[in-house]
Image 1 (cartoon, rainbow, N blue to C red):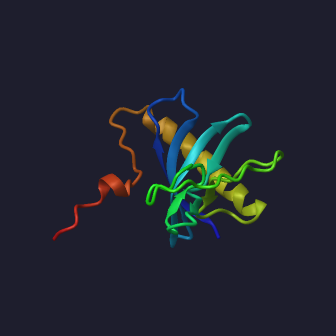
Image 2 (image 1 turned 90 degrees about the horizontal axis):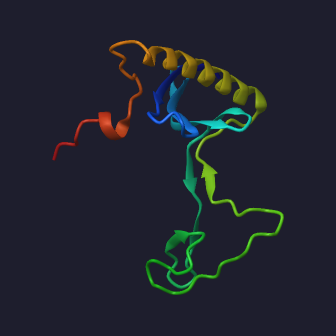
Length: 143
């Protein structure tokens, strides 16, 4: 699997650790959106899209945040299970992620190169971001 396209959306506040969002296309056939590019303590970190892990209320079976103390649906108290002293409770799970180091390295190299190119492009007059934001760029559905 090869990375065939990376589209970057730079963040305006360069003092923040979140440097950009990107979408990564593999083999011109599969795209992963909402990938975060974070300036971490050891350099650029690529954070794959994730979702919040939810728990279930024992009384009504509705989903709730793991840190919630009360069910937002039925109002009953929820048991908070403290994590083991040597482990943090996982609150997020990746939706998609590389499963081996080779794939992770390919993604990191492609995203890092695209980020550098986008930063250079952003300095040019008339710069237009080529990142497709489905929340903004998609047309309104017709009734």
